[in-house]
Image (cartoon, rainbow, N blue to C red; front, side, top):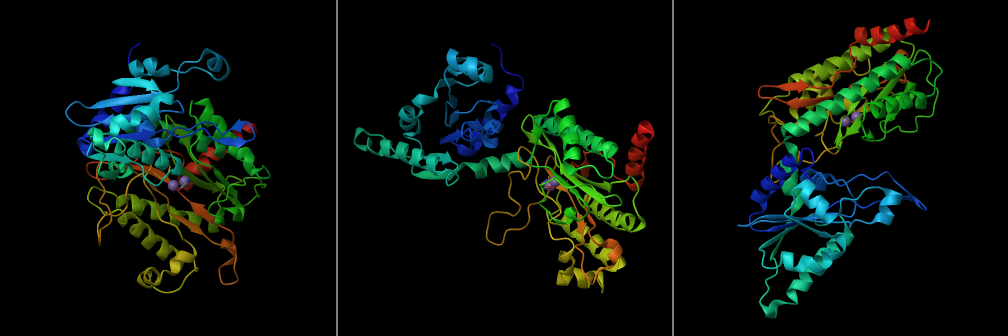
Length: 444
Ligand code: GLY
Ligand code: MN
Ligand code: MN
């Protein structure tokens, strides 16, 4: 069998990891299958770190990466099993997986505990995701103790246990070309889902009907599904940041906020759009919307190589603070509102996060040292830009703004000289009203 598509990029990543681990050994398990209730399982999702290094999709798999002069990647996976394959589907089996995914050796997963001590013996360092899974910590400890028990036979136990995730996080932070290509495709599918939701939106529909339009578009175009639980929040529900019930009716005259992105080949898109349920922004909605849009534009303009991670948040906050003053939500100066953090009443989250295999992706935000600074942006990093404005009804805020919740979220890749927005769903007031009008005409 020839190499699986793209397995060269996984080989290249394993090679890069070898540079970090020197002559150490890394043990990287995938995620377990998880029971949902009784004998029903959640849809299987591999572990992001394991996937990043292998592209191997099956559960019950572990890759052991040996550094040093003759580096090796060894896969442990399920054996072929005709009976189980009839019920549950294809299994590569160790030999098939070795060939298809470019491993140096492969063994049945049942042999892992027996082989692990000999694989980690005589290595200076063992790299493992310590502290993330108690069962795995115990398994690694058992392997270490098995080597210690052979001390008199001359076996040396690794003296150092190193944080594997820290090494991989640094790699995952800067996307390679294969990753960027997948993320762009995930973004295109997700943007199509948002446009579809806009076209199908009608007052009186349930929020879950719009969720269904997104799901339809994601699956129709080959995505695995949602990368995270989608938010479809009509009216004042948009002021609940993690609203996921999606079970209310969409009020005529209100806005709806949709935060949804698909997962494609393991990679997430993360898009939010907010639009008028009846297809036309009211003057107050438009004023508020334009402020969030301007905040997003200012944030995007602040993204460039060398800029500290927090710079684009700060840029968004200043525009939002001015907007809050203009709308009569706050009094005083921009500097005063920023300094006192009064803006947090209406904008209480950060303006974005790393994006990749995980929607809130791996990677530090601050340097890992005493007094460390914000990480500086570099080409190939991918992040979201998602300013918002959330006005809960209260006696001291203008009535026209009560219950307005707006967020606009796009995905950006840092380029050689700036930031490129690679999510393209209708966004300006004119674009949104145009898309929503198109469908109305077709239905009339
Ligand atoms: N959808 C999760 C987020 O926007 O951070
Ligand atoms: Mn989002
Ligand atoms: Mn986000």
